[in-house]
Length: 330
Image 1 (tube, rainbow, N blue to C red):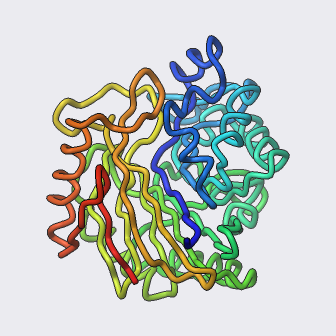
Image 2 (image 1 turned 90 degrees about the horizontal axis):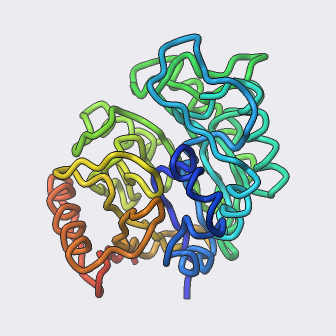
């Protein structure tokens, strides 16, 4: 069997999730998905919070929310699920200032969890995360167009921030630099993971479609999007999956009863040792009691129908395999 890379949307372990975890086992946050997650050969997610109990809430600009989790439980939870790498290129990694960001970097480094998208300075933020998926080596470059005040500088910590605009010269230069750094690792699989666009939007705007397609043209094998808090459609560009938004995976957010941001998928990509994707599988999940679970029958049906509807404009068709949606890429 080919090795499988799992990709998730936002993993937000702060606020009520953090409070709840102090009264239960650290791994409870993964619900009944802990074993399936740990069984993947590779697992990569967007970590939407700091791993620190230090620092002060960001006040240089107005922030409605501040997310952080106690690393005493959160780091073991990540390792128990087999998380191999995370992107920190998002709008919450500096919610508690530079000290908490540095704590987060140290926690991940000490745990052996690869990271990309934020760092101690610009160079660190734009370096790739490199992980093994069986015999396949994958490199992840990470970017965000959110929260300009969190951008890393030459000598200051922050995120790998860009404008998602194919005509922006600074963006093209920064992306090419990151891709060159990834190529230096001679990866079999190159993934671009992006925290892009506005919240609670079902369809990616044209600028993000153009940007995702441009990344594929520049040599990216998989585009892994997140930020909207709801999943968006899947497109294939020259055989490369563009997951415009992988939605939420764990959080404590209020649920929109129409958009159902508590429902989504674990995205599983089978790859060969040479990095060739052979199958994309979408496993329905839902968030309950601050934990992720296999979706029940009704929720799974909603997820499948909604994903088909949102992917139809991209001419993407899925087969059904039990509760899952599948695309054969062989």
